[in-house]
Image (cartoon, rainbow, N blue to C red; front, side):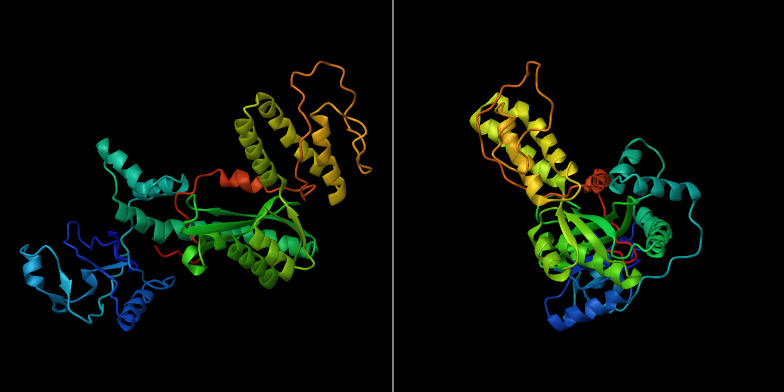
Length: 398
């Protein structure tokens, strides 16, 4: 059972005084009663949607008359504290005092948050070293009251001028945006997903949307929902339309862009395709037990980048012809490639002895790629490990 009370400002189930005894209670099964509990929590948390089977409230939000055997439990004669049937929480957490927090305590919380470390692990290490430190309740209080508002303000102060400058420069309908999603955990059961929209000509992040998995069908739909919100935000708030959208080969996104953005050119990101091809050639090398395949893997991936970068017009047929030529190149055939669009290799004659072993003919997939722009800048951003996603403006419920 989780040890955190979901009521806003509750102190995460530990009560207002240190060492206070607290009991946690799961959400009731009766639908009408669940709605009343949800209504109580919404009064303390604007972002609250609905309680789940794992959501809990602590006994501090109920009166002593709401329990069965409260006196025995408080004296230690009972281990469990049960609520009476039909009980509704009525006591809201007391507002925190205006007493300022110690400055170094706040700096410690800021250092933990801004470096992406986990507070429980960081504070435990300090405690093991006999260093006087704060507890996790203080960290989350600092985060909610001071750090998150500053992060939100800094992001808005940076985002709004960028969007206004694009609008003033007449970039409406000329935006070249790269979008990509990121989950807070690997696999198909992530709780949060973020979607980032980056403008390629100015190399600036225009928008970041955070989607909770229970807002959509499942975790795999978070990326599409994030794209929808980003497009709606740019269009409705700043009247900015996207001319070229570069994404991965997510089929839900492909279908949605085709149906809802008919005037937007959709391109597949070469970085994602190259990563997929590189993994494929690794498996081919393992299956065929052929060392020569592994030696050509990096060259083939570089050739895939060259096919897109050397075709600024974005002509799919020309890119396809260049990509097919690699099948002839790796078997030491550089002319008469049986393709009128690209009849011969573009490199000069190879006079030196090649260290790689030439391969036999094989078939390769023709891929539609983005000629000039990629999402590699987003991937560089995503190299930062996300241990906790903060939903800017609207804090995600836990």
